[in-house]
Length: 205
Image (cartoon, rainbow, N blue to C red; front, side, top):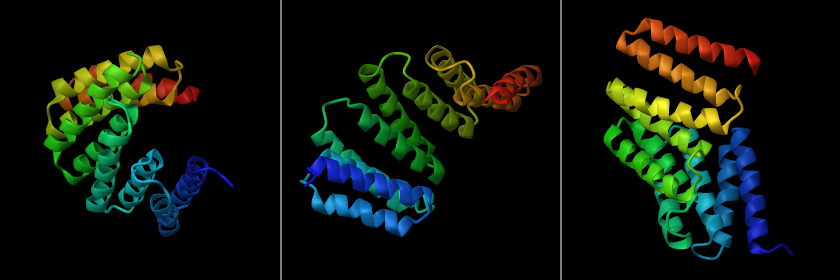
């Protein structure tokens, strides 16, 4: 008989596969089974609630997604060590929901909290930190604060260039984001250079 962690991981993996196949109801069945069968506050429940949040997010039900992610965060804050990277991931997920709901102030607070955790729990050039800088960029971009957006893009690029392969798609994406910011600012020459760099990398992948 499998131990609790092994069975929960299998169910979470099966559920995640169902999400990829767009079989959302079946996915939720697997995730809720993890929740119902696991010890209270077990870390596998954090994963299950996060996965349920992903299901609702994929379906465009942001309110239910938010509730699921917040439940995952609530459990992670009592079951995981302080400043655990998983908590940062959940803050990023919550921030993404708020951004899609158009609540940029709350999104920014969540992203900044995620970054705060990552800066003390991960190596300084970890790709996840670059991702969070990119998330923060997206909020400032949506708010029209292009100077702040550009600074976060440049920070994301700085980290990505030392932590990822030179032709990694994430670097191309970041150059594209930088180009978009310059484009919005009306600096078309710099925008063009950034877009061209993104294109060169894209051609190599």
